[in-house]
Length: 264
Ligand SMILES: Nc1ncnc2c1ncn2[C@@H]1O[C@H](COP(=O)(O)OP(=O)(O)OP(=O)(O)O)[C@@H](O)[C@H]1O
Ligand SMILES: [Mg+2]
Image (cartoon, rainbow, N blue to C red):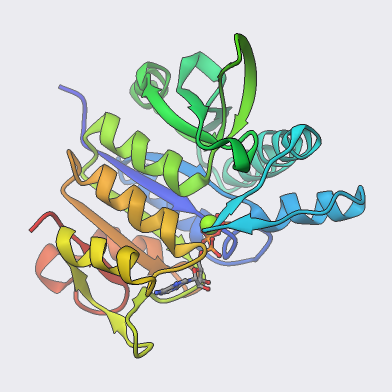
């Protein structure tokens, strides 16, 4: 039987910063953990769009993506960010292979809504390439660039990293989905961190608008993952060894920091 997998979404907090997340990934891999990394990189994509003079905007945490923007996002996420992560993990002694949602048919998507342009909604996940890499001892590092049919043509589609992580966790029936981000959890209406959410409470956060911007795809992805994944954690990736400590911690002690989302 395949070992239980931990899916780790790394976001803006880790990319480009010298935090301990990559060290933790390598340490956990050496301890025998099966890890799948999914990364974002909104800031890097925005930087390159700005350099090229392409204006950009977000709706509910998702980038409105026209044809030119799609090319830049694919180059920035599937190219630069993905390769820099893989190389950094290898330099620390880890074994990693970078791939995107296009590779090995991993993430098949369709247009989410015409107003958003080439933003993809994932319709099918084929986890076979991930399983193959894990079995061979590699940590797959996934760029959330995806593909799908648009008016009869197969095109690249831009999928949010959180969405991709949620779908991948669901497809792998992961033991845990961990979001490393730049806040120390989900805040309620009075700006207090909520330590634990069940499905209904997480849905309320979306409906009330308490979760907005980049938190929206995280909560939606959590709901999706929890169809098969036992637990989702949203934690501050900027804190030293946040990842290692979270994976090492026993379920009972999970209260300190971050938000835990479970089915009930
Ligand atoms: N209720 C909330 N609780 C906590 N953060 C919230 C909430 N609502 C909105 N946010 C915003 O969500 C942001 C996190 O999402 P964001 O997309 O910016 O980062 P990321 O997903 O970690 O990085 P990337 O998008 O580069 O992968 C926080 O910095 C915060 O501004
Ligand atoms: Mg985000």
